[in-house]
Length: 162
Image (cartoon, rainbow, N blue to C red):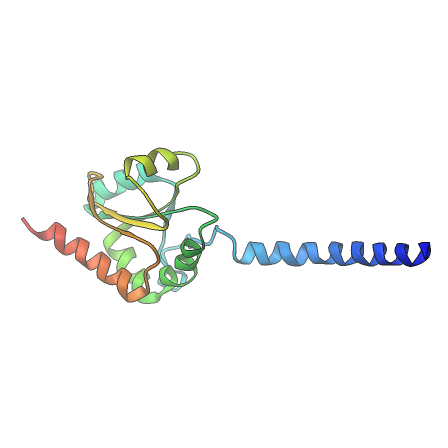
């Protein structure tokens, strides 16, 4: 009986040890750090990671609006946006051309203060700001590629009016 328990314990330990690398790999593939770094549309929208101040400087210099993806690492719809909508070639081309794009974790660094200032009530929150940092348009929740394109166009049209 004692030997049977020993075999069962060893088997469970072996299974656990084999499962750790598998779960680690799965966590890495679907984890929160999914934002593309390059400017190539095949990789998706090119984001500045947690760099709001840099984005303001770039927006002023380049006369562009700022698109902010406010997210948290635990947020399922945030991860879905990063895996799908932000990787859409049409979306990436449009946002990389017309905006300075910022991905802001609202729970790290300057994130909590920005989330409070921006009055974020749900995640993901997508906000478009003018070059001076004033909000132009905001959306809460997951958006499909065509909806995100419409959101971006609406913000640009809103800003073009006198």
